[in-house]
Image (cartoon, rainbow, N blue to C red; front, side, top):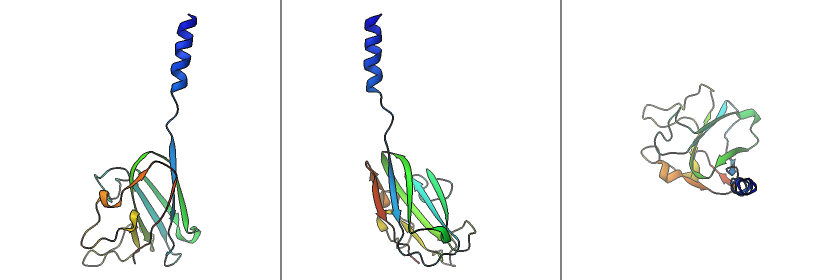
Length: 139
């Protein structure tokens, strides 16, 4: 019985809770304090950067935004972030007749799309420690 308890104790000491990390996102060029800032965190290529496909989703009132937002409790892995400044707070990234956004938007690694939305692999960051990133919005 003593040996069973010893073995169980050794096994339990090897089990540790999954470590999580934080990403601090600075958005230095917010054009104004109207509407909301929507942040989507994606953890897989499928569905990036579509609505309702996010791993985590945040809405911040633009007039309460301090210039930086902290995303917490993310497990180690690959993530891509998409942001848009929803100035009219309608929940939609409004576009012109060509499909080009009329509201500010941006992606992790500051990828600037040319003719289509960027791919997950272009924007992905490897999260294996706490990190701080900056995303400049494109208006």
